[in-house]
Amino acid sequence: MTNAIPPYRQHNFVYPPWTASSTREWEGYREGIDDLRYLGTLRKAISDAATGGGKAAAEAKLAQTFVDKMDVTGDLYAVRDSMIRWTIRLQQATGQYRSCGRRRHSK
Figure (spheres, rainbow, N blue to C red):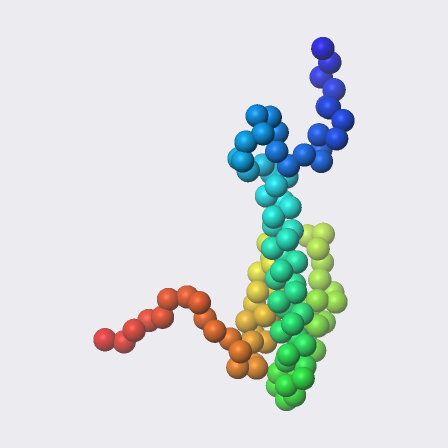
């Protein structure tokens, strides 16, 4: 018996006994899809803000510069956080932002 890695093991998302438990490979794939969704949402926000004119259009240009210069070889959590912040900023500039967090009620 050898200690060789079976062929194509690096392409697996699950390992024996083939249960539904999460693996690092699956979590990486899932996070990659989440990042693409964040980027798609940001690109739509840029497009909406660019057609809005005024301050929103100026914000859209800055956000597009961020996307054009985005470094995906570094800290991806920081990139994701920046995409979220830019999306919120643009949605606020166009009046499309809706918070999904808890609202504070005054007494």
